Amino acid sequence: MRRCIRFLLGSLSVLVLAASMCSPAVAQGYFNQYAIEDILSRQAKDLGNLPEVYYEYAILYDQSGNSVIARNRFYTRIGDGNTKLGRERAQLIELLNRQTIENTGLGDTLVVPTKYGLDFRAYSPFPRYYPGAHNFEKLFIIHKTVQAFAAYEYGKLARWGVVNTGDPDSSATPSGRFNFNWKQKKRISTLSPPGEEWKMRWVFNFHASRGIHVHQYSMPTGGPTSHGCVRLIDADAKWIYDWAEPWKTTRGHMRPSSGRGKLLEPGTMVLVLGQGPEGTPQPFKYKKRYPILKRVELPENPYDVPPGTDQQRIWDRLRKQRASR
Image (cartoon, rainbow, N blue to C red):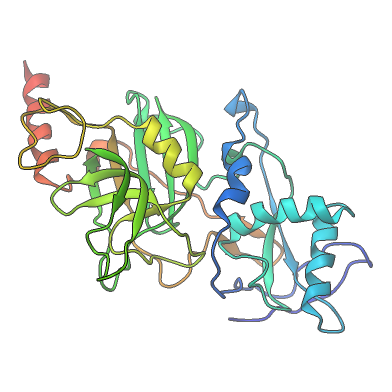
């Protein structure tokens, strides 16, 4: 971790970086999932009217070296003199940086937005409109590089949020094109060690043969960490559980037991894109004067993404047969 040259523009102004490109702090913490529900759920009536958001550098600093004083000063600055408001805004900063303030060391750099209190989609690395998904009622995307998801409705961004995908060194989340299959409100992981239960909530499967799901679980701020599944913050996991469509079979929508019956329709399409980051996700490009949010590039057509299972290959053949009639 590199420390940045720091200086103060006035006694109450934000600490700004201007001397060199910097990397963010890397100490890992955990998101307080229930404290950020309001941030994730805030929605404007018109996506098109959301303003552009720009970003600045801020450094956690106190001349005496007291980290508690440094954090309180930071809260005061970003809250326009109101420490309580600053603490609330800090939750957004933690999401955007993948870094808790509590685990940010003295002299470490954070990226702060120029506008607060907006629909969370205003801070999205995903495009607000995805032309390739214009004809899809619903499309769900997981991007391993930025460790985030996006949900689209007819090409319009409905929601986005952070994720933790599988550890690329041991159990990487598979890439490709999938569909949501069965779902279950609560489930105990089959990988739970003896005498311990890994409880998952709002489980939605998208790779039946490997048992790969999206679900709620504890969310470290660092990079990929799961055993292949995709971890979500509770509010996001519940929203996806209610929003996405499961498969339709002659046995209904639930998890298959000894046999799932005949598959009638696939569920909502899921694209798993990108490569897992090396270490902590890097949401921003650290330019000399200011940081720039890294924007996700999506495939021109979702069907350009290779099928991830035999299920998708079967549906591809059926889709092409119907199109040729």
